Length: 369
Image 1 (cartoon, rainbow, N blue to C red):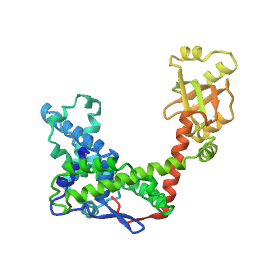
Image 2 (cartoon, one colour; image 1 turned 60 degrees about the horizontal axis):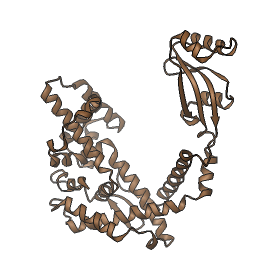
Image 3 (spheres, rainbow, N blue to C red; image 1 turned 90 degrees about the vertical axis):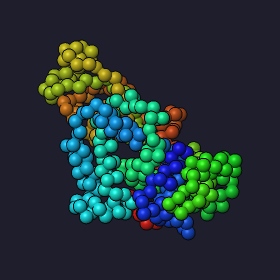
Image 4 (cartoon, rainbow, N blue to C red; image 1 turned 90 degrees about the horizontal axis):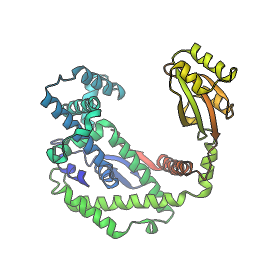
């Protein structure tokens, strides 16, 4: 619950967005604070805090080393941010910031911080220890990170889906049997209330926050209990059958070659001359790679070629973003229920489909980020 302290200090002065409605289900309306507290309950907020910490470390590194400030990259990141959100004029950008409860300086700070984090991503292992940072400053910036990164909108959809499924549970009369242990709920409430502190500036008492934590913890537990019951053997088999082609697993040995003419010659050597893939790789001076993939990960042309092939067949030339691939098909296996990874994927699809149906059926949106 380390991120709960943000709820006091992360507000834009004079503009409290915490109580702004985000969506409704039935008679219940969920606001920004609910979205944030739910993310804390799930443990998702911590990753945002860590991302802010890494960005601040990158800024500190720039100051300490005297490296040139990457102004062109930052300007390009700002332009891409605005284009992605269709903020084509200064007024549209100002309106978006107003709706989000952000200042221009906070947005600009996010752009700079995230750009530097991308540039210095390879050096994040050398970050300063957590004790070297002011966590109040980190928490103040975490709301900005959540909005500008798109994570707050993702958190809103995640909460909306879970709340919609729980509403179905209520209608089916399964609420009492799906609640979490009272001790677990009480502990989560106490942790959040302790982290939040006085809550000055948003008009909510620690007891009110503790109540939200308790309610959202129960919602999360009910969601998981209900979806566990929904993942039946029949539902899993139906998903596996529905994705029989996409989840087919392929093992092949392949070469990546620079030109189509070289790839065609390699195919001829394999098919007509009886050469091995290792022989062709040595002649072309490229490594032979062993790869395992699912048919859903390849484009339509390659998928069609694989579906029409049998183990031992030579495929190619297959186009790559740069160059061409020649491959020897080793094995091809349709998805099976006794394959643990396939079963987990099918179970996830069952839950995702349930959430999507209930969310489309029940959720009324009031705000986006």
